[in-house]
Image (cartoon, rainbow, N blue to C red; front, side, top):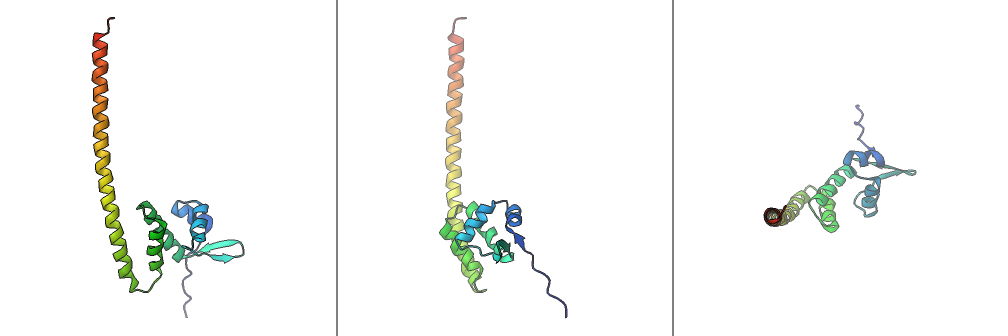
Length: 136
């Protein structure tokens, strides 16, 4: 009988390095109950479930989601296969909101940048006027 392939695991420092976060970040999400590494004495062992959950958490953070929103999505990650539909529906609603917010911010930034460039052009023009009227 073939042996089951050994599941990939990570130590806290290995997972932190792979995900580009600090070990403190991992401990924070553990304290929040979003990940639950196995304990072997004082060593934390992270399994594929923790890795997947951390990827969801970090993606949610990048998207600007609150901890409560991230928790809702992450907790559905472990649910029955039928919860995948609910997870995707919730995520799509939130992603739509994030998309609208980012589009508005982008528009605001373009408008502000145009204003900055206009004022800079006015400053340059005024400096040229001052230089031209300055008796040398």
